Length: 549
Picture: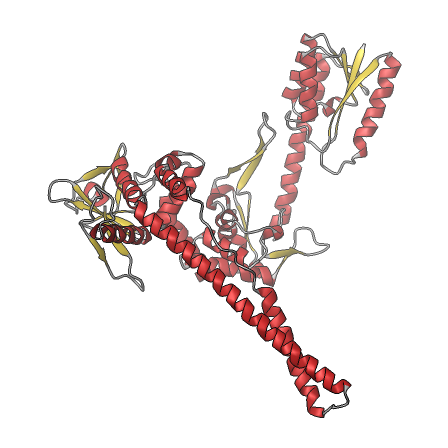
């Protein structure tokens, strides 16, 4: 008889040596039965609430291949804490004519599986209830049920008690103030990381750490403990029996436990209300598309120009009306706007992308950029060399003066004024040495001769990149960040006029200006499309260009 041993211990206060202890007991049991030990399967610090354990899965796979005759465990609950897992293993082993033995019970029969498997699952359920009861007791006393929130420190010797960490509390208030003022979580995270402000548990900041999920109370912007409200039981936690992953599910608000702990307040009510107001304003565009349909809580917008299209008649939003067609929302929902024109999503996106490709692919423009860029880099390199030469000359002059004073002292010509002069020269020498060390040599730049061709290929692939699930999201965000808005209005000839505003319009305007200049000088592209209108409109502290698509 070929026997194998399965050993497991959970992570709940059990020792690493538990595996070795179980193995030794099972080995002696197998020896008494006269079986030959073939293999040991083990799972360390893994709960029996899930079958997704490497050692257990290897045991099942080898059982299907018939590699052994009997499985030995210390007790049946080592197989698992769920009746379904224990019964499933027993059925599979019985089908393969493989015996199952427990050291404390002997051969396991169907009766053992039913009784002991049920007891193991009841143990899990009872343990869960007792844990929740203990957490509820702590919460009702104003103490944390578990975990450490950013901005607080545990009070030593008092389970669940917290005190405010003033340094982290200041960061929490700063994050809330920035967000209420209109700064995005991503921009806040980048700023904090640039300033090397440690995030929770010392990790770098991420936008998800800040924004979290409002319905689950996660993230800096959703933790009501910052306003002195301890909220417990927002979510229920359950393990997926197939994967063993712990999943959370939001509970309805009537099941929440809310306790007032004003001594832990960090953020004032007015600032918190401002944060909640901005979250409410953003929740529609983040969680739903323009037609009001849920996006499964997607964090990114669905289409390239979602939320950027504006009606040129009423200044309201252009939203999705049907399958991939944009129209004036005020005209459809309120009837207050006479703009009944719609435009296909692919059509307006194509006009933006065509503008990018046509303008950015001008060969003369790119060659001018490459030439100017190389000349500027080489000029900076020459200036750096000249500056370094000047510093080295001045350093040599100072060193000669120091040497002259030292020789004079050695020759007996010492004067009291020499001491002060020598000190000043030594200080200047140290400064010059430091400046030289800080000036790194800038090598001349030589652009690759195939760079224009590579650039052309990348721009031509722009639409393909946007269609890629992985790269497209980042490319979409990069393009969207350069667009303030696109104003759509009925055209005189029955079409749709589109005017682009924002940084992207400035880029296209510059490209178009260079294109016209080259055409006047006889160096323009043949068949270049002229720009019918380019203008500059005044803005709040800046002048964003507008570009007719």
